[in-house]
Length: 471
Image (cartoon, rainbow, N blue to C red; front, side):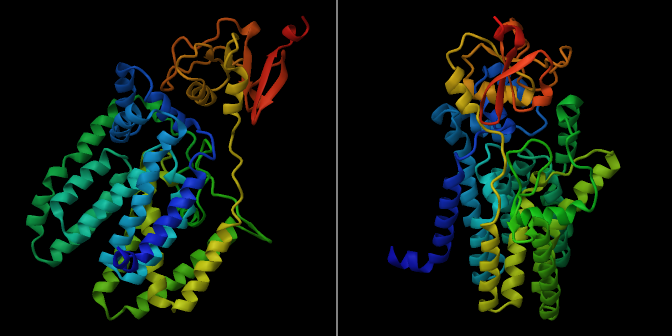
C-alpha cells in the first residue's frame, strides 16, 4: 500500500485537490434552467419523458444514463450533480494516464494538477448536464486512438455522437490523425475499412436533427459564429465561464489591481504562443515529438474552426464554449507539454503559482438565487404562484415539486404569448385566478402596471395586483 502511494503520490494529490475543490462548490449554487430541465425531465411520467427525450436538441444518452441513477438516488441537487462530479474526477485520472502515454511523467503530473484546479472544468463538474461526461468520453476515445485500440475507438466515437452532436468536430480531428497514422504505416485502406461502422453516423445524426422542431433548437441567444471567438475561448479555458447564467457563456470576472480576466488571459496566451514557438524550435529534430505537439494543437483548433465554419455556412449561431468543452482538456495537456519542454522546474513552479494566485481573484458570479427561500415561504400557500418566464417557471417547478399544482406560467405584459414550443411546459400552466395570484420574477421589466411589490427571496421579487393590497 505504501509503495503504491509513493509511486502514485502525484496523481493522488491531484485527485484529492480536485475532489475537495469540487465538493466545496457542488451544492453552493441553486440549479438553473438547464439543470432544472434535467431534474424535471427525470420526474415526469415515462411517456412524456421519452417524448421530450427524442425531440430535445441534445442527444439522449446522458439523460438515459441519469434515469436509473435518479430512480436509485432521487432528483435532489446533490444527486443530479454527483454523476457529473464523478466524471469530473475520473477526467483528472484519465488525463494523467493519457498524458503519461503520449508525453512524460512530468507532463502528466502537471496536467493532473491543472485539470484539478481549472475553473472551466470545475464549473462543469457540478453542472447537472452532460458536459462532464462529454469531456470524459471524448478523452477516453482519444486514449483509444493513441493506444491504437481501434475497435474501442469505434465504440468511443459512437458514444461521443450520442452524447453531444458537437462531438463530431472532435471526431473529425481524431479522424484526420487516424488517417495520418495509417498513411504513414502504409495500410490506409485497411484502416478506413475498420472505421466503416461509423461512416453512417453523420447521416443518422442529420436525420435525427431534421426530426427536431426548429423552435426547439432555439439558437437566437448564441453568440454569432466568428473566428474572433477562438482567442476568447482560450481565455475561457484559462479562467472558466459563469456556468449557471442563462444566455451565451460569460467568462468569469477576475480582478487583480488594474488587471481583469481579459488582460490576464491575453498575457497567458502570449506566453503560451511564445512557448509553443520555442517548443517547435527545441523539438525540430524530433519528428515524433513534433507530431504530438501538432496533434494537441489540432484537437483544440480543428473543432473550433469547424464549428465556426459550419455556423457561417448555415448562417446559424452555433458557437458556445461548453459545446466544445473537451477542448479545455486538450488545452491543458498542450500547456503541460509546452511548459515541461521549454521551462525549468523553477520557472514552471513560478508560472503555476502565479496562475493559481490569479484564480483566487475570480469574483463570485452573480447568479440568480432565492428559489429555495421562496419555497420555504410559500410552500403551503393556497394561491397560485405565477412565473413570468419559462426559465423561472421550470426552476420553480423543480424546487416546488411536481405535486404542487399551484405553479403557473404567464406573461402578464403579453397575455397572448405562447410557451408551447418550450419543452416541459404544462399545457394547463396558465393561471386560473390572476387577481389573487403571487407573481414572481427576478426581472422587474416583466411586471406590468397595476402590480405591486410585496416581498423578495434572494433575486426573486413577489408582486400582487394593487387592488388586493387596497382591500
